[in-house]
Image (cartoon, rainbow, N blue to C red; front, side):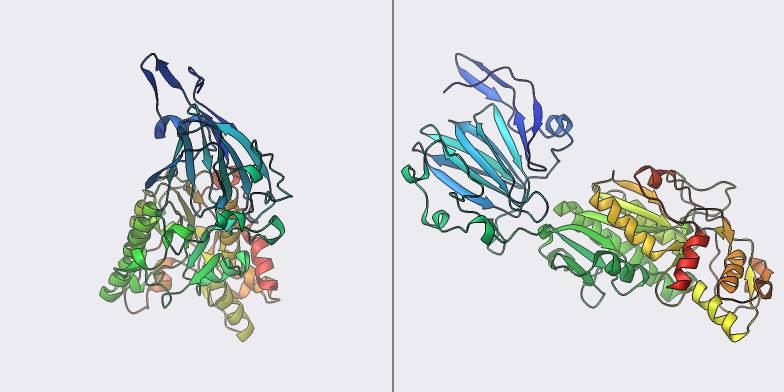
Amino acid sequence: MSIAFGKSLSVRETPIPGLVVLDLPVHGDARGWFKENWQREKMTAAGVDLPDFGPVQNNISFNDAVGTTRGIHAEPWDKYVSVATGRIFGAWVDLREGDSFGAVFTTELDPSTAIFVPRGVGNSYQTLEADTAYTYLVNDHWSPDATYTFLNLGDETAAIEWPIPLSQVEISAKDKAHPRLPDVIPMPPRKILVTGANGQLGRALRAEFGEHPWIEYATREDLDLTSVSLDTARRWRDYGTIINAAAYTNVDAAETPEGRTRAWAANVGAVAALARVASANGISLVHISSDYVFDGLKAEPYDESSAPSPLSVYGQTKAAGDAIASTIPRHYILRTSWVIGHGSNFVRTMASLAEKGVDPKVVDDQIGRLTFANDIASTIRHLITTDAPFGMYNVTASGDALSWYDVAREVFRLTGHDPDRVGKVSTEEYFADVRGPIAPRPRNSVLDLKRVQSVGVETPSSLEALALYLRA
């Protein structure tokens, strides 16, 4: 066997998205040879298409005869394959749902090469030398409940040019019985779980993503995020993204003993539980933050690097949840303000008062931008489908900052009523006669949008979005 010594570590792309070939440095002399078969830091740094995929199991396949042929199997996990001794011909076929379904790539592997096989890409191997052994790392434990996808080794559409004809090699009965490409059921993507599915954002996410077998919408009744059994509540390795739209948002009630307990359980305890699940299973977590993590004393907009300084219990729980979510390797934190969606909200209340002939007094010393739930949902979809860099993103409507008084006047105008019917009042005056605890509000809730705009997200202005919302 001839091994190419002295290669530099490099990563080569293939026609199949995510399937990459690695050239490995092999060091040899008269005694034999040595290589670093998987060196996490070096290899993930060598190419952006080679992820830090978190292997949990190492398997070895030994083949004593030339021509032993296995496949074509697409497993529901990622796989890193390298040769320990001998030489193999490999063929890979994309069996995932999508535009690249059916794409084919073939190459030979020896100890100086390896290949990273993404979940759902069918892989097959034919030994070219006797006593060939290849090893593979996978990022999930084998399970009888796992869903596989298969393709026949002799499929005419893939038209793989096997070095040794299939009629002359050893193939298992199972592999001979696999379907042709037109009959293959594509492997679906890893699942997306949306929690809080009945809330404002949850409903917007359902409208954005639609109904698919690989999207699960869960309410508290379906999935208790505070349960001690959350770790085993699902086969979590089947999930690629969790969008946590569940939260405790009653800012005033959070100032009561009962509300404080509920706010910490939902906004901190549940996030910690999801963080544990996400970190352990390589899942991306989308977490929703709030302008209430700030005290609102800055004169300029808050950007993603601004330090939290919450005034209220609700703000404290959101800041704590943010800190936990930020520890997950794969996370998106979307900080929002003044969220408007389906159901009861400030805009609907003002429209109802206008229609009933009530002339409200609205605070004019809190400024910010509206954030419409459908814009949050579309931003989430954009971030996860474009593989945007993980981290924190401010997401609100764009345009000039407004006060609640300004918003109320615009609602009256857009619904055909005299905006001068809206009176202005300070925050202190507005709450002066209110019984019960009142949470302090940030006076400046304007969030800087430069980072989210840099990854291709453009939201309408508050006034444009408000007009669209009231026409819907």
